[in-house]
Image 1 (cartoon, rainbow, N blue to C red):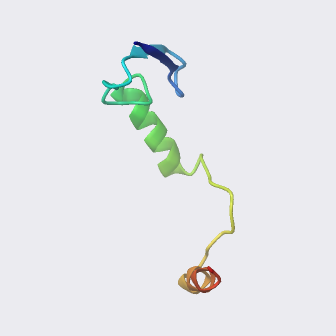
Image 2: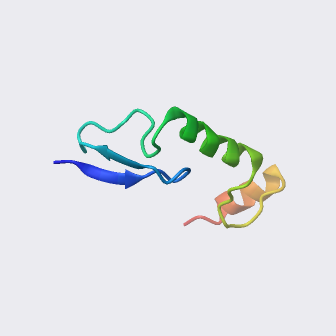
Image 3: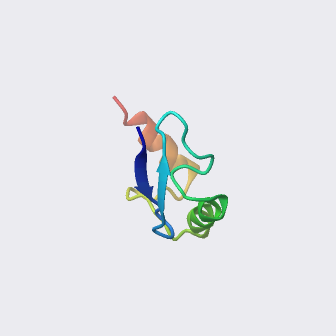
Length: 66
């Protein structure tokens, strides 16, 4: 059985067997994987949540956990 996935960077369709995913999965190539990594490193992608500016903020949130 073969599955098809569109690369999140370039949109190229990549066919693969689920048991044998490409090394750059879920991207079509190492190039697209590195472009995505660079976008994270540049801060273009963000995960919503409270901005932690200090270690004290992080410790306060950790204490608030159940």
